[in-house]
Image (tube, rainbow, N blue to C red; front, top):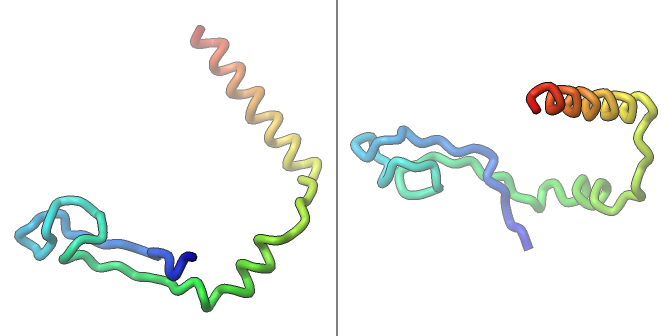
Length: 78
């Protein structure tokens, strides 16, 4: 069960400024914002259990053009 999701994290990156280490890892001295999942329960349920939808033709065409572009770029490098 998920209780909350980290919305943002902020570190100053140096131990002299209050952080215990140099990494953004939710350690002591970092500021974090959490969003409780319970307040968005209805939104999650509505979107998680939907029937799969069919993409619009324009989306499929854009996907095809993107894949064709990747194929051409790869062919030029080889």
